[in-house]
Length: 565
Image (cartoon, rainbow, N blue to C red; front, top):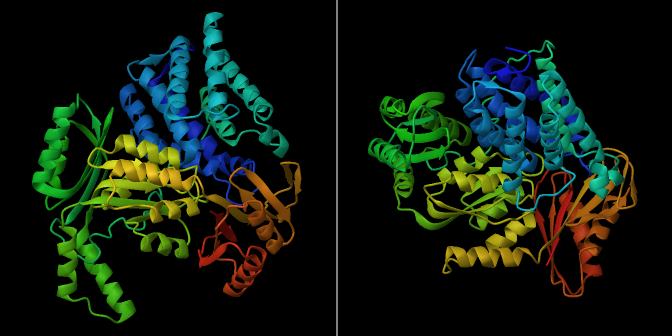
């Protein structure tokens, strides 16, 4: 490799080094969240996103195939994307790799073009881009790269160093672009994460020795859908092997090829998901002969992430454990009934809700949610988690309730990758909005009518959440001390106090208006039923004109989640 070019081996090392540096800094980045809440997750989301791709790149070994590396980076990060910052990061990688995948070596001018393509792709993924964020830092780096090319810079190390230096400068200016950052005394956490990726890549380019080995995630750590196999848990299983793999496309996979492949899978199994994304195809099928699916797939390209599970064996083990634990006998009649249900034709509508807390999960289930994805503010599910949940819903149209503003982008990304069903994302930003959306679903209405109606109804829901501070800071001119209680509303901080009850009362007061009719209170795992009932009694006295509903939510970290309608 000459000084002025980056070959595929160096690009792989630079990407892995960037991932490693981000992983090392993730907790620090988490602490940069504007609100000093104990669930800062930007660093975690970005790390899990890039690690999904890093494992695929690492698995390629000492490859000289630029296109294969680019596929691993793009597809791995796309499926692993979590949270807004993670989705944006995956889109930056997607745009970058689109430009460089046909090159065998990367020159300064190619890198500048790739940076520009990365920014263009990421901005398109966000409906309302906000300056002072990771997008701004990325654009600053791309603009600097373009400027250096125009100035005739020919030294790669100087070029990369100046691009990163400028990215750091733009990051330092984010508090001037977003007043809330300045008031909290932090820079944008997503932008900091991007700088750490670039810095790690630059370190390895300059010869710094780093450990670039990546271990597989622990079983179950990448997917938290609580109903990943609920359709089979109590059923006779027609097709015994759950088979999953990714095809790294070696030739054109056009619409006809995709339809032919899906038709073949349908002839040998069921529960089929076949998602094509430019350079890769994600495949899931239940079949009695995994080899047939694998042989057919190999005609289109190399395979990776191959996983085959014997569902009959798993099912028997699960039934044995159930009978051991509960002292019950699972009858043939029960399993036969469940099997019949699993073979029923798809219903018109189904629902997926993201939730945390056993009480809130029960509420969503009772309202008709088919699949609950475990997650929320403390752990944002990935695009892959959402796609897996979609596969479990036996419906023509599936509504997704993200119930967190940081999950909406990942859900929207899942829409682009879903081909077998109509997927509609209702942009619920809070748990109460998700509950309201489900309550207002009307089976007799069309999908479009329900979508419009639910979006209209959630707009009237005001939400407040009570948690505690993990550091000293100032927000909205309110001084916050570590371990203070905080009430956070839709538009910002509503209350800060050393008294939990006072903060909860102030938070409701900040949401109630003259036309308010209903106050809903969901108490968390750290609040006793007695304390919650006492709080409810006080609220009933304060707001006699409103109906007060108290329910156990069981959510961690947030003592109360409250809504006013």
